[in-house]
Amino acid sequence: MSSCCQSPRDYSATSAFFDRWSAKYAKPFRKGKLDRIQRYLLHGISRHSVEHASILDIGCGAGQIHLTLLKQGAARSLGVDLSNAMLDQARGFAARDGLLDRARYVKGDFTQLADSIEDTDITVLDKVVCCYENLDDLVLKSIGKTTGLLALTHPQENLLNEILFKGHKALARLLKWDFHPFWHDWSAMKEMVCRQGFALRYERSTILWHALVFERIR
Image (cartoon, rainbow, N blue to C red; front, top):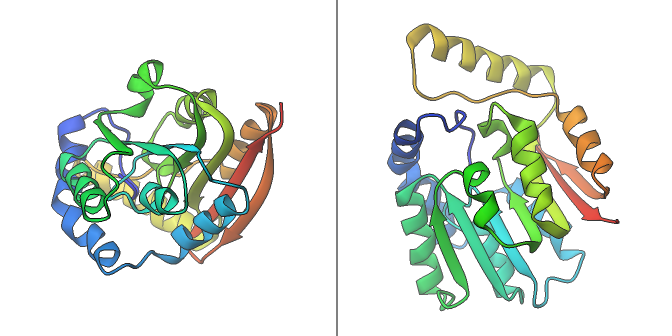
């Protein structure tokens, strides 16, 4: 689910959307490529040691982030996604790279699964925070599982992005689409993470996306 989507109130609609896009989304990674914001996110994470770390990848998509971290020395990963097809892509890449013994996958909504998931050293939310209407619930439950780093990407705060997101949402309501993104107060989100005992250690942007890496300090 590593792309903007609706709040997962209708699992079948959300899953079907990403099922349709899974092959296209996985195509660059099949060629060994990551998009720029993913490279920035990984750079921010890798400034800290990932050796022997556990990874929780929420909305893991085709597995680009956690599989790269496993190659860099992380011990194990758990990928959570609503789309079976996305999880199939991730499992396929894990098998290709000999990582299936360290990569585990669960289908479902993280906010509902959180109580059954163990604490982790590094939690990743790549292009996921715009997927939830209740952003606070998603972020607080993610923080609750994180003992080390919280790494996420969110839409870049600029007028063009805000118009695109809000326009898409308005059109979706008018046409009764099952799928639309959410635009939140991203500065308030960052402040909320810091209030929960994290410090911002890294940030970098593209025109469309912003990468942040926080570290738990208490």
